[in-house]
Image 1 (tube, rainbow, N blue to C red):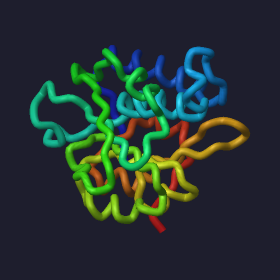
Image 2 (cartoon, helix red, strand yellow):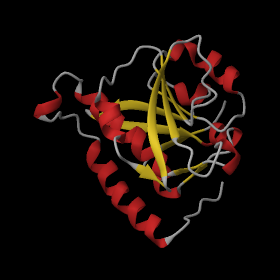
Image 3 (tube, rainbow, N blue to C red):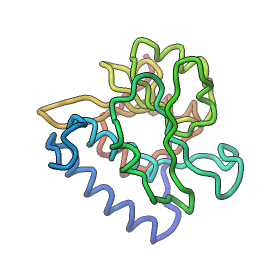
Amino acid sequence: MIMHTRRPRRLVARTAAILLLICLGTLRAPVYARSTPPEYLIKAAYLYHFAMFVDWPDYAFDSRNAPIVIGIVGSDPFGSAIDDAVRDKRIDGRPLIVKRLDWAQDPRHCHILFVTDGNRIGDVVRRVGDLSILIVGESQDLARHGAVINFRIEDNRVRFDINVDAAKRSHLTISSQLLSLARIVRNP
């Protein structure tokens, strides 16, 4: 999969974000956010930054200014941390919004979908099919079972895997900068 950058300004923003992503991995919580486990403060920031390093096809949005929707399906481990991470932020002129979904709701309007129950990933992957949705989870080997990105803890740091086959199936272009930080996996 060939990756590209759009504009010099975006390249500078991506480079700064990469440095932040590298620093984010350590599991330490700021004093103000003790109610949310440190792991989820970091994962919330990662979800925002993932949106900076993924390009969706134009047809994935209803309009040029449509928001990037981050959906959380299942129980919400983030609390307000995810809302705080995206508040007043824009990527390519698009605001980011967070929606919490139960399992019965249709996730097809989301651009990033965080799945809290790894046992249900197969159902989620079948429901969204080849739509341009960045499916993210946090269960062991989830990326090998259809998620595009899967969080894991390694050496007390939040790390992630990227399934490049799942990204291709979803018509998503992932920046080479983000790929360089991930463990790459493929469908079996």
